[in-house]
Length: 185
Ligand SMILES: [Zn+2]
Ligand SMILES: [Zn+2]
Image (cartoon, helix red, strand yellow):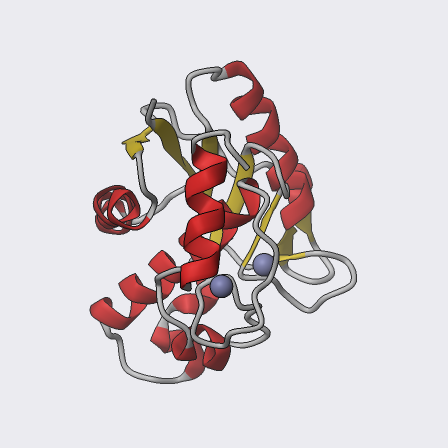
């Protein structure tokens, strides 16, 4: 039986990125289907830290978790936000996920080339978003960080790590993902 992934926009999110994710995620995760859920959530105001000017990723993830708990038909829910997110121990995060669990979040904010003073590049932006989405959804299946720097499950400390890795799983992580999607792992 196929596992269904839900993409949940939180606040204003570029619909081209959501459509790209919907199309590409099913090519990377075996035996899955994907939907963009029709009722986006607002960015939770209580997640905003005025001092830092950033949103707390754990608070947003909690909202996604609550949503995912109500949507029994979805194996995993990927929240997508276009705002800068952080956890208290770190300056920022590209994303966060329950590992294993049903909820994940990615932020598009620091994936835009413009954030680093580079000129806009829609293709590069899209491929970065895909890598972070696959990575966080991999965590929801229980996949841990992978030592191989080219594997999508490699930890990204900076955008350089993200650019170095592929949007694909290494053979070992792919096998793990397949087993977990089919509840065999
Ligand atoms: Zn990770
Ligand atoms: Zn791997």
